[in-house]
Image (cartoon, rainbow, N blue to C red; front, top):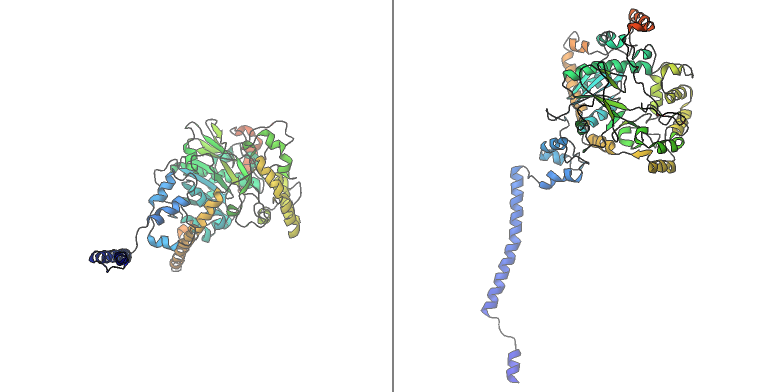
Amino acid sequence: MAGLYTSLRPQPPSSSSSTQQSFFSKVLLLLTILPLSLAVFAFFLQWRGGGVDDPISRWSPEESHKFPGMDSSPLATVAHSSQSSDCSLLAHANTPSFPYYKDWKFKLHLDLKPKICITTSTSGGLEQILPWMFYHKVIGVTSFLLFVEGKAASPDVSKVLESIPGVKVIYRTRKLEEQQAKSRIWNETWLSSFFYKPCNYELFVKQSLNMEMAIVMARDAGMDWIIHLDTDELIHPAGAREYSLRQLLLDVPSNVDMVIFPNYESSVERDDIKDPFTEVSMFKKNYDHLTKDTYFGMYKEATRGNPNYFLTYGNGKAAARVQDHLRPNGAHRWHNYMKTPKEIKLEEAAVLHYTYSKFSDLTSRRDRCGCKPTKEDVKRCFMLEFDRSAFIIASTATEDEMLNWYREHVVWTDKAMNLKLLRKGILTSIYAPMVIVQGLRESGVFSSIVLSSQESLSKDKFLASFESNSSSKAAASESLPSRKIGRNQHSQAARRVLAESGSLFEFHDEAVPPRSPPSIDADVITEA
């Protein structure tokens, strides 16, 4: 019992256990000091080197915000190869990243094919033109030919436009009008029925004359395709392997001369839209992208008491290969003097037409036309019935009456009906343009180019203050106010005589005007 008691008594610590405790203490100290030393060393390197290349900051924005189809896009390759500094990454740390392009100057590869040119005739401001232009740069458009007048030709606006790479600004000067007065178009019948009429007819002739000149400029610049668009229209290149107009046209067979984009029409859900490109995502599909049963089966619900299925035109826009003997065939089509162009109509891609998307569009159209607000006189000014009705309302109604009319005929306020038409496929939601334009805006593209041009403009004004006369360049680019096409009285009289003796004209089919979609009482559906 004494031996057992002795064995249970605590023994003094041995030298081996003491050594083991000392070893564990040193290991613990080492594990504490090592991470701290590494952290201090990393901080020292970052401080001395001005920053460390962080793989997360380098790759995460592109991978987490990748736009559909951008992985295989040559445009995406440009974006990846364009490196920005750490300072620029820090500067935009608190704002949404824009993964499509990091260089707002959009310096594309010189050998990028095909080369695409868009031409337009516009009197709009920068708030309209810049989003329209840079959206199309994102999807692969190479160059722009802008025939400007009105606000678009003002010094503050035109200076910005001229500073953008790939943009050529053409002013409506007296010299331009004299050149167009000698145009081949004036001596042929295909556009003659639109001559000497006001408003939309005059604009249609002006667009055709500008397109004729744009063909020559596009050919001289080595362009492969040319498209005429208004600045309230965006190409939606659906159906391509990537969201790219360049890729879409690259896949077109080489024997095709013209590609037709059916148009979709904006269907606004509010009456206070300010920026259609970033606020409108619902569109009404074109007849060409619907089955006949769906189109006519839902025609009354989709029309909502308006004169036609679409408020304005429904025969789309076209892209044409730049080739010999190409000519315009009105603002919606192209033709060729030597052959009938082979054309295809795209089954998924479309032109998104943001028509009457702002309430102010009612009065702006009214202010551009001097016709009388009567049912008979508006027929001289407008080709489409809804434009005529809108002009009369804008010219005769009060502000409140106009707003009520706009809500009834333009705004889609019935959510249940909207959902029904969405399910039927009449309406569709398209978000890509909204995302791209909003990304451009948040990335500072528009503000950067405006500020850059303003600095240049200030320098020009400072230098000009020391000169007694305006420079020849300024005089050459001075834009004239909008004038009637073919003002020269002798020229007009001669053409009227020629028009009456049609045998003196070279015969061609009449130009394709803006046309409404098929109506429900049409016996035969014909292709536009």
